[in-house]
Length: 89
Image (cartoon, rainbow, N blue to C red; front, side, top):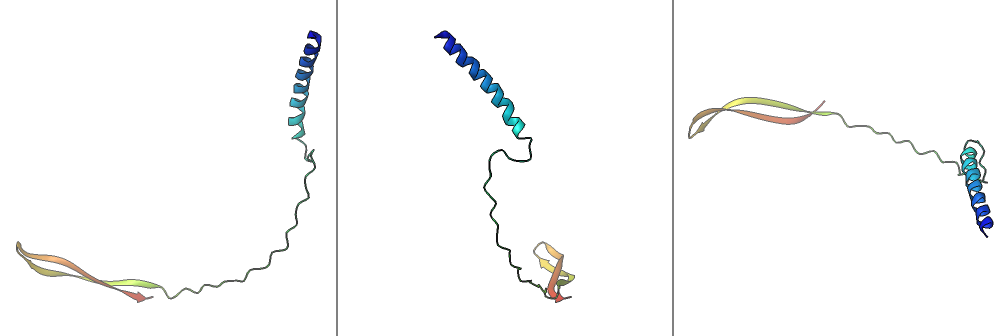
C-alpha cells in the first residue's frame, strides 16, 4: 500500500509543477486558450442635437464709497460707507 501512496504523492508533485508552469506561460500568448463568446455589436449611436448657449450680457458691480461723520456717545467718528449696484457691461 505504501508504494501506491508514494506513487500518488509523486504524481501530485509532478502535476503541480506541470500546471504551475503551464498557466503563466499561457498568459503570454495573444490568443486566448479558452473560447471567448463573440462580442455583441451595438447599434450605431445617433448624433445628438447641438446645444448653443448664448450668455446674457456680463454684469459687474459699480460702487461708490465715502466717509460719513457719525455722532456716537464716545464722540464723533468718521465712518466709511459704501453703496453698490449691478451694471451691464
